[in-house]
Length: 478
Image (spheres, rainbow, N blue to C red):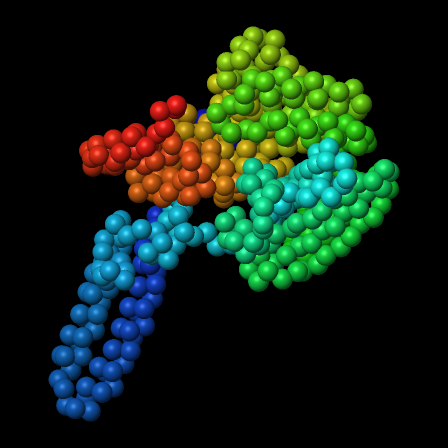
């Protein structure tokens, strides 16, 4: 199907709008009211038909009861849509906060059902005497996460959200609720000379009980084999279905060089795609690390991928608008696909190249579609699709993609901001405010969030007071 087919686009828009309508029916408890009404009506009809003749009540009263129940059904459904019963009485649904309806904040209203086959892989703790091995522990974590991200039958939370639990006390139940997962994996890494020990445990986030725990004590050369075994254990424990391609992907090693992988992890830690661009110095620091990694292993596809992304970022955010910078981004992306044809990261990097270089949206979406098949849990793919569809004026599709990015990366402020901004453009102010409220809970120090919420009051009601108050709370140094 051609991407520019107007009939297909209208069909997608109708499908997206219909999906949102049914989700809204659920949020407003219309289904529940309809089912309850039918049950009660059936009981009343039974009473009328069985009991009324016993008391010699005329037959026309039975017909009247049935007619009243039939006419009352659409009225009950309309009232369920418009109003809700709260502890403070009956209120219009739009005026009831999400928590009062028993739902967590969500762009569409209801709390998403937590899939049983869902997991958050928390950063592994470094127990090595050498604190520089923190990057080594990060590498173990990253490879396991990357392997699981490629499995379509799982929901896997993105790196940005899990990184927030790198330090401090961990309450597994709270983490599961915050990230929308049923399981949490945590572990430790100790490296000593040519030996490495990895402890890992998979925990049921609902009950805080261990599903399994295991220790791997191997030679350093077996590091990637350990990570493969861990990923396979998680897949079996969650009973995820694997395609032949996904099964083969679990066996792939990112590089043959542990030193190259260390350098890549350090570079990746400097690159945090946030939608607003990294500081220029981060790119300056990351690119030499990647050059060193590729000197050790020129076949290291992930290092080429990250090289492409950083060159693209430097161009897009105005640090270097030369054509040479774009050429480097394209060359690195094409190298990924030459080394590993079909690799999702290669298609993702090439999509950003098309997006950044000439606003070639159709080419970008074609590459993103390929990336999405290979990386079903990659939030960058969903986010990019959402932003491009917004630029193309396909608003409903944009919201669906951005909501998907939010579900995969629920504590990413950029993902929440992009979604709320899009909902604001659509004048869906209540939904936008729910998303911003969630962002405010994650980053209470971010001054732009209360300003954005106050702006919603100005747009919706013409009320300037909240915006004045929000601006007054911004520190002078800002």
